[in-house]
Image (cartoon, rainbow, N blue to C red; front, side, top):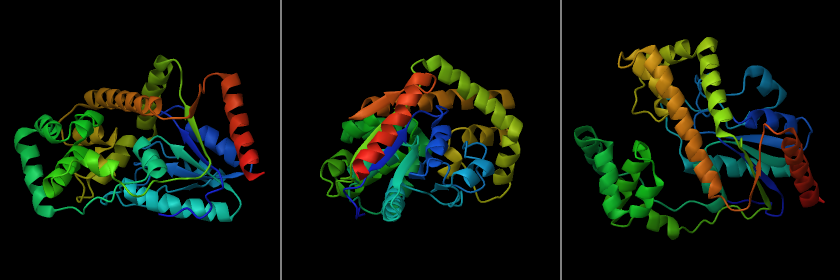
Length: 318
């Protein structure tokens, strides 16, 4: 992953879910200075439009986003895949004399691109099957505790319900005898060297965001989320082991389709899970160095945010 134009600017527009990032990104695109790269681990999937809060057809016609709607839900998509695709796009956008504006809420992808990725070993199928069997027999909390014994740093960083990353961290340790955190410390690829502006678009009043999350999920249901998940459910080749179906909202509606939850329970759990996601996004952002915070619900702060972005582009390209 090599950036050809290391003197040219890159912008990260980050923030918790439902904070208004897409609307601001579209407004900035229309000024003609930027191209948009989506940084969202769910929006990459086809057939997953409503529950991922993907920009609609009208918005995408107005302001096209790279890295949206191009992976089948059966397939996985990793931080490494994202970095490879994003690096290529950043080079192409700079070659067109535009500024790449990366917008989204998948903080792991932002961090991987900024800091680089460790050169991790490939998956060992036998070890992965053994860990999956442990997961089925003893549960995710057991695996998280096992990870804590061999890699306390990674275990503290990962949420106890993050099955995909917990199992991968255990797999790396069992394959190599070296904790995942140690691999990251020794990584060779150091990531972006470009002038970087990191923006956090995040409401100061968390209760306002919680209200928006609840209202947005109601709107998703009105827009046809149940039908969207039903079509995925009846494909016959997807299940909750797929990364796509573990996405917030999809997982809970899938459980409703299976008869494990009532619709009311699925809705409540989806809203709670989305709030928990937002909380984790705030935690990531608070640890992000050199980030500029703006409240999207404050007109003056939002105006200042736009001025900051435009000034950064003009100074970097001047």
